[in-house]
Length: 478
Image 1 (spheres, rainbow, N blue to C red):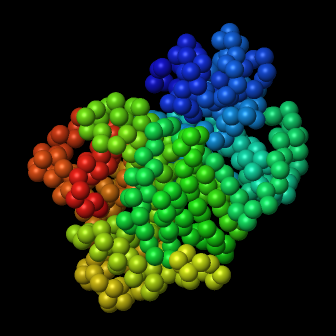
Image 2: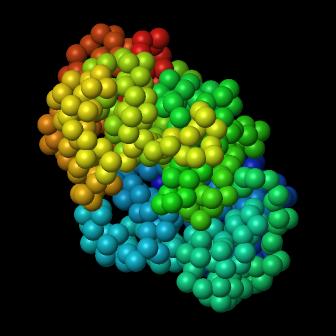
Image 3: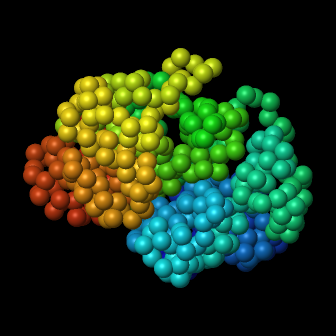
């Protein structure tokens, strides 16, 4: 299949469709002329005749062509793209912000392009080349698919669904839904859930080394904020004045993760679900990555585990400089206990919110160093908190090279921390902390220069190479 998403090989797509091949889930969608419906390649229905099929690179392109989403395979649950080249990375990163409602929060296309350091014309061209639609059409499709998900999986009212999905009014929501899908919203209304949580499902491409993901998170779990069990990850979340719990479990048989949200967090689900997707690297392409890395693979389906709360993980990375994982975890626990807010009426082991940048920016070096870290490291932590709290966009920069350059310009942050955060916060597949001691030992006790040279063969998947090298040794990981 061609790497150019607008020139899909119809024969290859049809073979993947006929085989219900999960490796291609989300990489293309099939539009069926005889039904006017578009599906994922894993749809359980009997494959239509090839002469009745056309293939599109995105759900938005299908809807632009006049097709409505399948009610069985649920295109809104499909995994997204795994960025490889620079153009794809730009388009996919922009699409992720669009999916999170960026264009519905008073921003326009020029604001979005500015975040990436490109012109709006270049961004529009990149999105059209990768997804086959304009940014506005992409945003509209995401609003409709979000509304469809909420209609099916929640008991929100029509007004709540319209506003949560990014529509300005119920009338606008109803009119667009009916014109695009040729169905009134009430036709796909699911049974009203009675549980105290609301569940959503997000697809991924198998394999997924779920146990390894939980093990990684378990070693770094923050007391009062995170809880890890043999098959679940739970954490506290606060958005504005709304606080609640997020729980993630794996449904390996369906190649989906299940996301349970407290009802208080439902108004924020449109932003939370993309964060979950990035945190667990659900858009990864294990087939491409593992073919490229070859013998380096230690556990098929290893993911680059990201961050749900960027500032929280940035604090952890700074605290963890030149100390062991258990020691860093101990200090992070002290930080949360000392400065984090307590959530009333929550379980005792999930009743804290990690301190925000604004809160830490007001602390003194002595207060933070007193938790068990050098004064210079406390100064670095406060400086990062100040930059984040004042809206400098330090952790929101989406260009990886700029992100790393901005971090290493801060006294106390070196290339290791910057590349590690590029992996965890940006999900940059080619970040590589070559001066990491464990990586160098896993690669045969070589120097950082030697490791950098060897890692050239692993581009553009060097972050995954690092994960497999870390996984291959029993030495402590960062």
